[in-house]
Amino acid sequence: MSGLAESPAVAADISGVTTTLVNTPDEFKSLLTSSRVDVAALPTITAANLHSRGIGLSLIGVVDADLLKVLAPKGASGWQALRGRTVYVPFQGDAGDVTFRKLAAENGLTLGDDFEVAYTRSIPELMSAVATGKARYALLPEHFATLALKGAPAEENDDLAVLLDVQGEWKKATGAGALPQSAIVVRSAFAEDHPELIAELRAYFTTNTKDLAEGGLDRARTTELAKATGTTEDLVAMLIPTLHLSFTEPGAARSDITTLLAEAADLAPRSVGGDLPDGAFYGE
Image 1 (cartoon, rainbow, N blue to C red):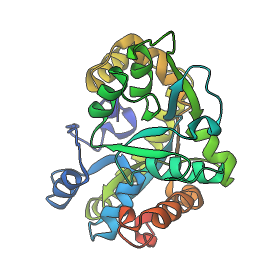
Image 2: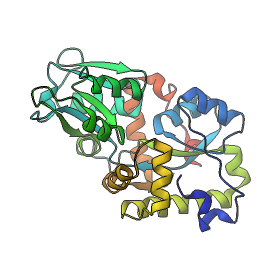
Image 3: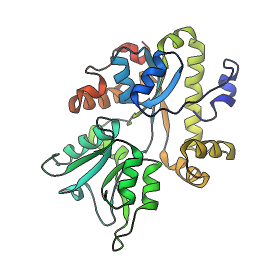
Image 4: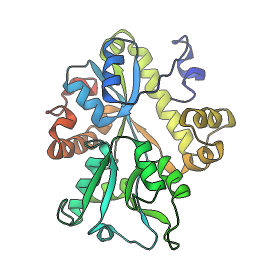
C-alpha cells in the first residue's frame, strides 16, 4: 500500500488514504462489514474465508513474494532435517501452515509420526521462542525471519540459518506458477460504485510491485515502510529487493489461487469457510 496516497495513477479519484493495521480475521470482518475500510491487504486464505462467511468482498489482485522461510540450526539440510523435530508455526490454518504441511507431506514426512508442529498465537510469541532458543526449527514470514536470524542465540556455535524457501518449494511441488498467499481485496459495494478506481488501483499495484522488485525504493518510502513494520530502514532497503514481489489480477491468478485454497480446504476446511469461493470472489 506504500505510496498509494501520492500515486498520480489514483490521486485524481481519491481525497486521501487512511491506513489501519489489523491483527485478526475478526477485526477485518468488523471493519469491512461496517464500511470503515474499503480496501484491505490480508492473507488470501483469510479473504476466502470472509467471502464464504457472507462478507461482500472481491479481489483486486494477489501478491506473490518470497516471504516464508523455514529456519533451522546451521548445517541442517533439506526436508529430512525435520524428522524427529518440532517445528514452531504461527497461526494454525493460515497460508504458512497450509503450505508447510502440504510440502512436508510431498517430501515424505507425516505430521505426528515423523515430526511435530507447535502452533503459536502470534508472531511475537514465536519470535520470543526463537530468541530464547526454545524454537530451533520455525516457520516465519519476512521480515521476521531475518530478524530472528539476527537475534537467535548461539549454542555451541549452532546458529540458525534458512533451511527451506517455501515459495520455491511450493512451485516445485505443485507446478503452480506462483504462491498467491497475500490478497488485496475491496468491498463489493465499493467496487460496484467505483469501477474506474478499481481499474486504476490494479494498474497502480502492478506498477508498484514491479518497481519494488526492480529496486525502485526511494528514501521516503523506505522510511514509511520501516515505521509501519517497526524495523530499521537498513533492513527494509536490504530485504525488499530479495522478496521478488509480483502482483497478478484475479483472472490470471485464479488457477494458482484455486491450488492454494483447495489445499487449505483439504487440510483445514474451516480455514476457507468450508467451500471454495465462487466467481464473485474473483470479480465476475
